[in-house]
Amino acid sequence: MLFDFIAAAASAFALAGIAMFLRVITRNLLPKWIIPAAAGIGMLGYAIWNEYTWYPRMIMGLPAEVTVVSAPKESQFYRPWSLFKPLVLRFVAYDGVNVLRSTEVDGILQGDAVFVTRWHPVQRVRVAFDCKAGKQALLVDGATLAPNGTLTGAEWFAPPAEDELQAAACKEG
Image 1 (cartoon, rainbow, N blue to C red):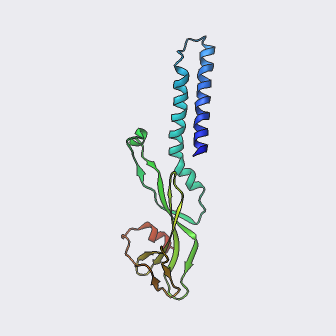
Image 2 (cartoon, rainbow, N blue to C red):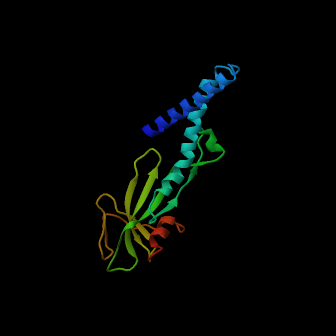
């Protein structure tokens, strides 16, 4: 967030400097208010650019084993530009790096669901998947999945039919 503040200030100074230069070369034909207006345009322009490029920059930094399963686009009244082109401010991904597969039961595995929200820390939630039965269980608050498929401290639930997290976890087996 500090980097964003510094970058917005730099954009403001740059555009204000350009406006000052234009006033000098036009021998003050441009009004004085052009300088703070250019600074404001610089800050707003940077903020809008930063919001629209946040999601693509985050995706480019993910390892190949991480699959984005949900990235809803949102519009908010206090971001009027998002009414014309909605923004992605959060997404859910499946991390296929630290997958634990059951050695005793085929189709049972554990993987991480990663919740990424702009301006918030990344959250990881361990999830158990039963690919054969099409069920999931959240492994939170001490819940565990034994190698034989026995779940303790959690309940299996059936996700929606087109659940992309389930599909990403079970695509390899």
